[in-house]
Length: 53
Image (cartoon, rainbow, N blue to C red; front, side, top):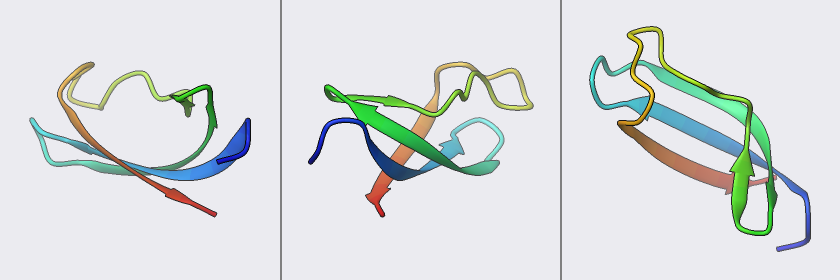
């Protein structure tokens, strides 16, 4: 995977079940989307899936 590549990120909250589909960047194994927390105030308990464009 190239450095700083754009990816599609699907985040699903394990508490309330809400799903968020975001575009992000992967750099040095870290994914950055700007996502902070779910609308139910959950900050840590998520299922995260990624796909390359």
